[in-house]
Length: 270
Image (tube, rainbow, N blue to C red; front, side, top):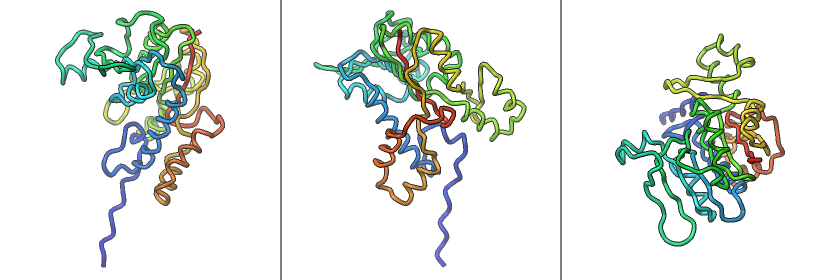
């Protein structure tokens, strides 16, 4: 008798955070997720060459996409990470960048929560993808800095962990007492199994946070309306269906903002 192949591990809520690892039960979903993210970014970026600040900390993914679209990009890198590989450098230090004519990406060492090395109204667009505002627990300060460096009419694209994800995490860890406090809490901080903490937002909380610093929300939506289980099922039976799934996601009408474990938002400085 042939051995029965081992089943992949069942996905957990905690697996809905980072890119897949080998044997990840949600590997197909993550492939879909990043394809959708790339397409959403391409749709959102300014049509004319612009100055773009990227504080996403996603290993240059957003910065690279923006530069490929013809924009001049400043990518802020986390100073703790850079100290391991490049030594201790002062905040605002330029690390490297593309040379030659045309758009370029300049990598700068600095705290993405404090953009003091940038002048006010100096950027046309800011990318705060990859849940960076949920990792900066004092999100109000980071949002205020984003508003400061944006020129009037400039836009920000941001992604945060949702209350849906936070409540699912608390339930998975049996934090029932904490879970009951979520609906009335002004700030929701949720621990991950690895000891890190994330700040989770509902759509109304996010709107209020942005409005307080003079940013007008254009829209808030789940990163993906299609569920991980749906995507995994479709791609397991039809591996070539990825482009069709991405088009379906992009063309889906605005849905319930409370759905989805990540919220994506676009806002403009007034």
